[in-house]
Every structure is written in C-alpha cells, then in structure tokens.
Length: 248
Ligand SMILES: Nc1ncnc2c1ncn2[C@@H]1O[C@H](COP(=O)(O)OP(=O)(O)OP(=O)(O)O)[C@@H](O)[C@H]1O
Ligand SMILES: [Mg+2]
Image (cartoon, rainbow, N blue to C red):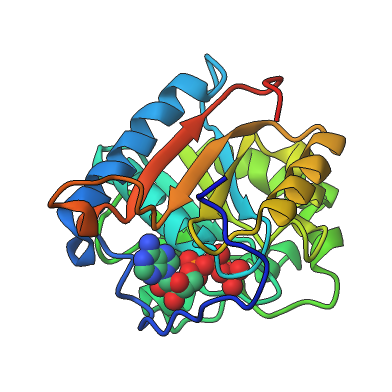
C-alpha cells in the first residue's frame, strides 16, 4: 500500500497555524475537494436526519483532523446551512487557536452548567457559522464527552443547527472519540498520506468497529496521488467513501 508511510520517524510539519484553515488561504483545488466532501456527505448521511452530528477523528496526532473539521464546517456554512463547529479535543484543543479566537468560554463551560448564549459563538466570517471552542481543559475529557449532559446539550443544539461538526482527539491515543460515538450520527476518519502508518489505521478501524461507530468515510489529507501539472495543488484529496458494513 503505497499511500502509507513505512514504519519510522514521522516527518515534522512546521506550518504556521491559521494558514491551512480559512477558505481564502486554501488553494483552489483544496477548496474544491472540501466541496466534494460536502457533496459526498449528503450521500452517506442517513436520510431524514435533520441535524447530523459528525465527528472528525484519525488514528494518531497531527493527521489533519482539526484542519478538516474547520474547513468542512466552513464549506457547509458557505452553502447556506447553519453550522456549529465544536472543538471536542479537550486535551490539546486547537480550533480557537486556528481561528484566532481568544475567548476561553467553550464546551467544558457549558458542560459545567455555565450559561452561555449560542450567539456568543457566531463567527466573524459567516453569520451562519458558529464555533464553540473547548473551554478550560478538564481532568476527565472522555467521561465528559460521553456523558448524559453532553447528550442533552447536543439534543438542544440539534434544534438550532443544520449540521454539527465535532473535532475529536485520535482514536489510538485516547478513548474520547469512541466515548462520544453513540451520541453522534457518524464519524469521518482522516488519513494523512506518507504519515499515517497502516498498522495504526488498522488499529483505529478495529477500535471503531468494536464500538459500532458509524464510519461515514475517510478523508485523504495531503494526497499526492494525482499526477499532472497541477499535482502540487492536489493536497486535500477526497479519498474514499463507504457505508458502514463494508469490509475494512
Ligand atoms: N494538507 C495539508 N497540507 C499542509 N499542512 C497541513 C495539511 N493538513 C494539516 N496541515 C498542518 O499539519 C498540522 C496538523 O494539522 P491538524 O492540526 O489539522 O491535525 P490534527 O489531526 O488535528 O492534529 P492533533 O491530533 O494534534 O489534533 C497543522 O500545523 C496543519 O496546519
Ligand atoms: Mg486537532
């Protein structure tokens, strides 16, 4: 499998935050790939779901989960849907930093019962795009994400939005993504070309399958598979979509 990195040291990515996220900072092809992801989601989401809640995870750290979550939520909002992006990585949150949000109030504050109006989280870029940062880092992220409190918060948010996207930690490192899985519609798994190791991905899918997670599909981040003179732009290649139940 050429697309996976061979075992060994991971390459480091010294890319400035904020560069790979906002629409205007992405190359044309990358934007097109996110739009394709948006279209493909419509086909894989269960029919009649009024507000799908979509988790974004991967096997290990640094594969592009947060980048994917930010950009996917943006393209969904850009098309007119009311979208909420939640930073559900309560261990190493990055959405607020990527979006240049300084406010600290976030998901953990709401989980702790601190009152917050959803209008406080409206983004400056699009009036129908809302961003809920992680809030203070709690001692028990996994329990919080799978709690009945989280379930009722999601239920009330679902009445206000068309889509909810949750940026999650990696499956192979902590149990958080699996903990929240019964509360969400489905999961997108991000794979980074020349970075994700095959054995890690296999472990990730085993974990997801064991927990009956509805995997909506995979996103191949930073793919170099496309040839031709524009290949350098083909960074975010939509990779593969499959319904739950397909053999892995
Ligand atoms: N396609 C890409 N091309 C170039 N740089 C990228 C690409 N995707 C992600 N990056 C960069 O790689 C780094 C890791 O990306 P990101 O934060 O989205 O990953 P993550 O999976 O959320 O990481 P973590 O597990 O730490 O939360 C960031 O600096 C990001 O800007
Ligand atoms: Mg992240």
